[in-house]
Amino acid sequence: MPSVLRNRTYRRLFTAQVVALVGTGLATVALSLLAYDIAGGDAAAVLGTALAVKMVAYVGIAPLAGAFADRVPRRALLVSMDLVRACVALSLPFVTQVWQVYVLVFLLQAASACFTPAFQATIPEVLPEERDYTRALSLSRLAYDLESLFSPVLAAALLSFVPYGRLFTGTAAGFAASAVLVASVLLPAPRPAPREGGAYAKIAFGARLFLATPRLRALLALDLVVAAVGALVLVGTVGLVRDTLGRPAGDVPLALGAYGAGSMAVALSLPRLLDRLDDRALMLPAAGVLTGTLAVVALGLATAGPGAAWRWPALLAAWALTGAATSAVLTPGGRLVRRSAGTPDLPAAFAARFSLTHACWLLTYPLAGVLAAGPGPAVAAGALTAVALAGTWAAVRLWPREDPAALDHVHPELPRDHPHLAGLGPGHRHDFHIDVLHPRWPATARGTASGPVYGRGAAGS
Image (tube, rainbow, N blue to C red; front, side, top):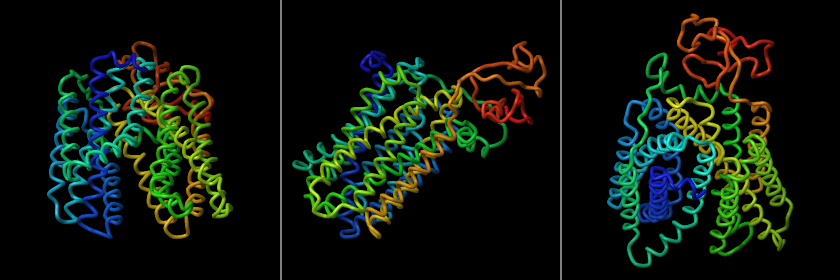
C-alpha cells in the first residue's frame, strides 16, 4: 500500500482525509459534552436527534450535490466545503440552545455530504490503475478505523489541559488543514455528463444508475447488511457491556476496539486478497459471515445465563470477526462504483452510494435503539439478523455469477453514422455503463432474453 503514497497528489489528498477525520473525531467527543451542558439528563435524546439530522442531511443533500458537481471545479468545491465545515465547528462552542445545535449539525453534515462523494470520485481519476485504486481504498478504510480508535484517546488527552470547547478549535484546524492540502494540488477538471431532462433527472440519475445496474443493486443490499450489523455494534455495545454482561465502563472501548482491530487487519490484507479474488467472491461470503455472526450473538443473548463466564470473550471475538467482515464488504465497494459508471458520472454515482448507504443506516439505527431499549438486546439482535439475512439473500440473487465489464449490445434506434457506433453498425461491445445512450441494462446480461437486443425503447440499452 505505501507505493500509492509516492503519488504526490494522492499523498496530499490522503493526508487531508486523515486530518479531517481526526478533527471529526474530536467534534464527536466535544458535541457529546456540549449536549450534556445544554440538556443535562436529556443529552442522549439530543445526540440521538443530532444523529438523525446527520443522516437526513446525508440522504437528502448528497444527490443534489452529485447532480451538479460536474458544474463546479473539483478543487474549489472541496476547499469551500472544508472551509464551511471549519466555520461551523468554530461556531459550535457559542450555542446556548438545543435548536442551534441541530441547525449547525445540519450545516456541518450538509457540507460533508457535498465534500465526501466528490472526494471519493476524485481518487479513481488520480489513481486510474485498479491495483493502485484498490490500495487507496484499503488505506481509506484503515484511516477510518484508526480515527475511531485514536480520536477518543487524543480527545481525552486534550481534555486534561483544555476545556472541551477547545476541541472544536481542533476540529476547525483539521478542516482548515484539509483545505490547504487540497488547494496545494491540481485535480482533474470535472467532465460535464450529458443528461436528458431537467434538474430532477440530474438529481435522480445516481439512484437510477444504482437501481439499473445489477452489481450496484447487490452492493446496496450488502450496505444494508453492514448497516444492520453495524447498528448493533455502535448502538448496542454500551448496553451489552454495561447492563447485559455487567462489565465496567472501561470495557466499552475494549469491545469497540476489537471491532476496529478486526476491520484494520482485513484492510491491510485486502490488496493481496483482491489480486487473487474477484469482488463477488470476497464480498458475498463476507456478508454471510456478518449475518451468521449476528445470528450467533442473538442466540447467545437469548439462551446464555447471566453468569456465563464465556460471554465476554465471545463478544470480543464476535466483534472482531464482525469488524473484519465489514471491512471485506465495504472496502471493495468503491471498485464496483468505479467499474459501473463512466468518468463524467462518477460524482453522481458516489453521491448516490453515499446517500443510499446512509438511508440504510437511517433504518437500522433507530431499529437497534428502540428494540434494545424496549424488548431487549436479544430481540434487537434477532430483528437485525433478519434484516441482514434479507440483504445477504438479495445480494446473492441480484449479483450475477458472470459479471463481465464489457457486454454485447445493439442500438437499433441510432443512425449508422452516430459517433457512438464509430462505423461498427448497430451491434457492438464495450464496457457497459448506464448513461444517456444506455438507459437500461442489457436483457441478455440478466439472462432474460435470447439475443442482445436492447436499444432505447427496446428491452434494455
